Image (cartoon, rainbow, N blue to C red; front, top):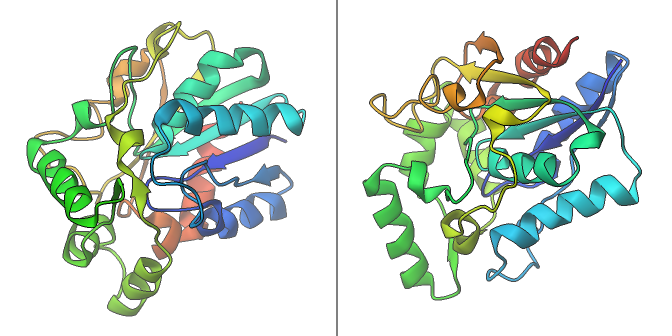
Length: 241
């Protein structure tokens, strides 16, 4: 049985992954879903990527977690890569779930299409507090396109403003993912169109892992809302030895 640590994406907190964590626990695994610094509603919107990564490094060390199957969703891929670089001896496997895979010196926005970068910059400028929110039409059509309207609306109300700095800051790594001596998996949701098809999650980003296990699962970018049970099974398939 594994020790799963689930890392959420932008605009989310660990609360949204709790149903998946509970399904993993029901299957006999240990599981937790911490909230990354910068994503709690009361956190300053000026928090940067290094602080966000350090918050999960601290979580792992304070809770003395070892033999971890670290799962990262979307923006959470930036965080898990940084955590694995800083405490590799505590990680059994990295599981990227439609997640960004950075190399040293890359930011999340380096992997986004230009229209998203421009949109986030304009939203942050309008808000004036260094944060970004996701417009509902984009959320509905591109992020959670496999859910009914009520589910999409309920999920949208759970989202928080996200610190723009964490998306713009370039990550500092001693070892790029392809050279990390840890097992890796990539979960690819086949209906995920949060990134355009000419800039796909898989194989564009997954190939940066080198050798990895691919798990294909039907669903959108927000499978944690639309079908947590299907996602939990995919996570277990990705995390098995």
